[in-house]
Image (cartoon, rainbow, N blue to C red):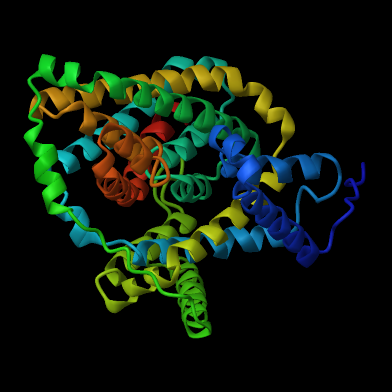
Amino acid sequence: MAEAPISLISDPMAVFAFLAVLVALIFWASGVERLKKSFEFVPPVIYVYFLPMFSTTLGITPPSSPVYEWMTRFLLPFALLLLMISIDLKSIVRLGPVALFMVMAGTVGVVIGGPISLMLFKGFLPPDAWTGFAALSGSWIGGTANMVAIAESVGTPESAFGPIIVVDTVVGYGWMGILLLFSGYQARFDRRTGARTDVIEETNRRLAEMDQDRHPTTLRDFAVMICLGMAGAVGSVELAQTDLFPALGDPTIISKTTWAILIVVTGGLALSFTPLRNFEKVGASGLGYTALYLLLAGIGAQADLKAVMQAPVYLLAGAVWISIHVLVLLAAARMVKAPLFFVATGSVANIGGAASAPVVAGVYHPAMAPVGLLMAVAGYILGIYGALACAWLLGIVGG
């Protein structure tokens, strides 16, 4: 029996420290003026996933370690809780019906586009490809946190995760580039479709000012946020293991891990109506994203480099998926006479998430960047629930 390869770093805490240093260096480099341009084309999340994968390929980190299991089990609910309590649901409701309708239309396009695309390309993909599609649906309805959450829920193997990261970047950011290009044609589009441009001014009036109040983070803030995040993570994991939350679906879609995620997401949303939401002013979401990227680095360290070679078929499937998403959005825009601004932001609020939506919104209408951000947050809330629905359909098609 062949022995497992020996890595340069094997102690679990040393592996964790190595990944933490790697993530820190990536985000430090992304802020260096001379390097900022390169991070616009290849976002930090790609480096966070692929550099640990290369380190394992080169024998620096091990392909399996107890620390990876710990990170998966606890860092994800920790991150999700802190992200959820930061959400201002009242501001999202004030977006107006057209904006929210277009976000939901974008979500529906992702939910139905995935199973259709998988049905078309199933014969050219491995049997477990549906789990990779499920993870991608999480990313395309809310972002990286949802991608990781759904991947853990359906048990996406590392072999299916690598190509999905490639698709998420190439197809997702490629589509964002096309949306930016379309900004020069929005007046022509709106005239041809008879769009109601007055809804943009109405939405802008409702969100004239967003709360940008921020305070320095104190030791007290850090202590409470870490305590809250870890208590929520451990509590949700332990509660999900009880008989109150059985596994559902064949193949399993609602697993014990899924229940833990649903508990922490729903609980976090409930807590966002309490004074705990004020912790966003001292960096709650930043701490949540830090945990999330550490987890993503751990997933990357377990990945197989050969899996990326399957990306061409995945890329084609991703392009078809995006096309279906766009068709649904255009149909929805025709129904409510939405201007191109809401088509673009409704799309990128799902596909791109909170990092991209304000950028696209600002290109179309400079004063409307906050609207793009709130639409992305609305998409993020829909993400875990919509992606689970998509995963269920994908399981039927690919299972």
